[in-house]
Length: 267
Image (cartoon, rainbow, N blue to C red; front, top):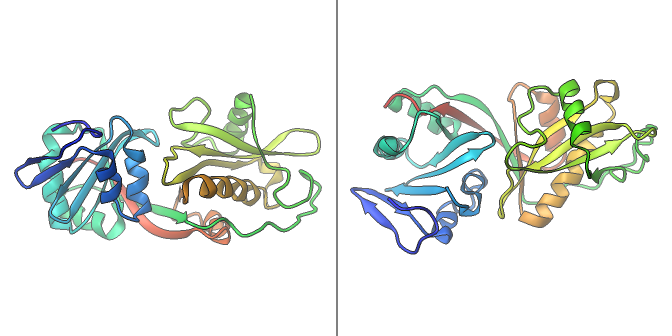
C-alpha cells in the first residue's frame, strides 16, 4: 500500500487503496463525518474501499488515531479485517450507530454512542441579550482571541476540565471568546481539527457564574458562521445525554445523527 496523495490506486485482493487526494475526498461524497475524517487528504491520511465499503484513516484526529467507516456492515467488517495487519490497537473505529452496532456483532468491537451535528448553512441571526455581559448586541462581543492561551486554559480548567480541545493540542487552530465588562474571559470555543470541507467546533465552555445567559450560544454562533463561510460546513460532537447543549446547537441550525466510536479490537 502507498501513502495518500500519489497518482495511482493499488488493489490488494478485493481491497483498493485510494492514493490520490481527490479520490479520497470524492469517495466520501456528501458525508460530513467521512469528509472530516479525510481532513482534505492531508499527509498521513489513508483510505480504502472494498465493494461498497469505505474506510478513511487519519492519525491524531481529535487526539486519537481514527478510522471512519461507512457501507454495508459485512463489507465494512471484511475491509477492517483486511486492514488489521497495517493498523495498531490504538486505532478507533468511527461510524453511524446502526453500522457500529453491526460491527459489534461481526468484529467484537464495543461502540460508545454520541451525537455528530453539522450544517451547511450559516446560523440564524443573533438577537440582543442586554444582560450586562459583553456589549449586549447579540454576538457582537465575540472575537477571535490573540495571545490568550493562558486565559483559555484557566477557563477550561474551571468550566470544562474534560474538554478535548485545549491550547497547544495539535489540530486546535484558534479560539474565540466573549469577555465581560471587566475584560474577564467568560466563554470560549475553538476552531479545531477543521479541514477544507468541514469546519469543526470544539472546546465550548462558559464560566459557571455566567451560565444560563446564552453566552455559549453566542460564541458558537460566531465560530460556526466563520467556519461555514470558510469551509462550506460546520460540525461538532456532543454527548447524547447533554440535552441542553444539543438544544443550543439545534437552535443554531445543526442537524444531528447518532454515531459511535470503538477501539479497534476483536475480529
